Image 1 (cartoon, rainbow, N blue to C red):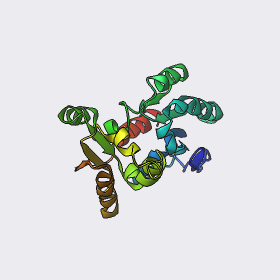
Image 2: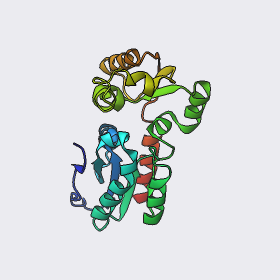
Image 3: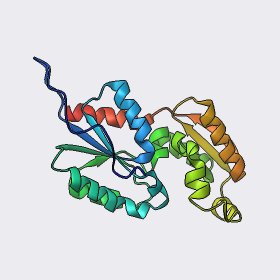
Length: 219
């Protein structure tokens, strides 16, 4: 379980002589973004950025996300002056935005991770091109069996596959990294769902640019 999983701690190295260390910054994120955010943190040397993640399986129960976020914010509000939420709307119907407006905290742009990875304009083009598209990221490709097949109980009730996915026509894999194992997993997911497979290399998209902007703003 990723609920409450911590990467780093609020403690900081002493400032070097003549150099001020940036103020600590907490990112509260979906567990599906944990690997990517940790990678970007290491790549960019954001030693002052700390990460707390909610369980990625909330993808299947988005109505629970806002209260989980509220509890996490309340838990760490006194420890961090600067908090950023690495969630999009994620199927909550604006509930995350209403919560964050009350807390005066910003989040990632867009309706879901597919939009901020691809970029909202490009994602809109993909959606117009084929509305019946099922999207995968690296995380979802890697965890397709656990989150989709087992999460939706398709292994026990295979007839549900067509009920859930009968209106989809293609699977679009929005990749962050170039790994053959992930590509194979994404293709296997498309085969399992009976969908045309397409791939678009996106990198980290607005996840990286938004984190960079927050680091600069808080730094």
